[in-house]
Length: 308
Image (cartoon, rainbow, N blue to C red):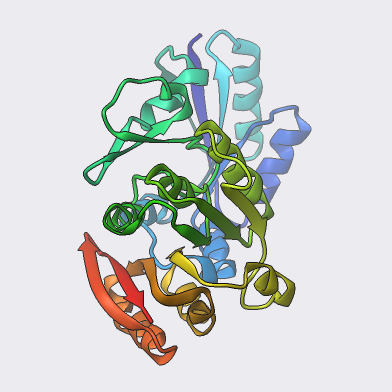
């Protein structure tokens, strides 16, 4: 089936009016691209990001438009949109899209991702693919953690060197569960994934199931270890490996409680740290009584291995 991509060019002030008008006329599945909305979202969620792709910022510079899609045979729909654009005095552009199986084409963005010496991250639809590497199988469309980001790759590479059979692992900010699953795939006896987002708990549990892991091997839970005393109590004890792959500000906030999860032989791996924030993170970890054992780097990102 061939489609038309229709774009109505507007302004931040008129964005809501355009969307409401289109919705009232029966047009749905609208895609809004607006620099102001993007910047507002970033500001409201500043605690959860440290880096924004420059290419994306440039793409959105001065942008304010609404996109929607029609079958190329829907001439009546196209005529109605042309009339609405004239009524709202908005420029409108139309582009023909190549005939594509949209239900399947998105999967092309998630090829197998080899990581380190022995691991490969596979989307669930390639789970049966033959490979000599240890498989980490995920639904890549659900949440952060597909194995493509340098911060995640560095943690997985460190885990290849550190994880030993029988390890107990704690994964703070577990997201998709990729690091917990990796630990189990490398021979760990158990892994606990913790995330502040309730959706992540279900997603991580689902991804673990793709790999054949379930409780008691893998446990997922929701909460903030710096604020939830009951959660802290339930997680009490030392782990052989503690993983924190989030952003610098969150790692800094977690630093004071991290020693509570570590023993004399434990390893802490922190990642998601931009190079310009490395010194702050190291200072926070050292202030909490931790010793820095190694720092890895990949592109603009840094990964820190520490211990008591």
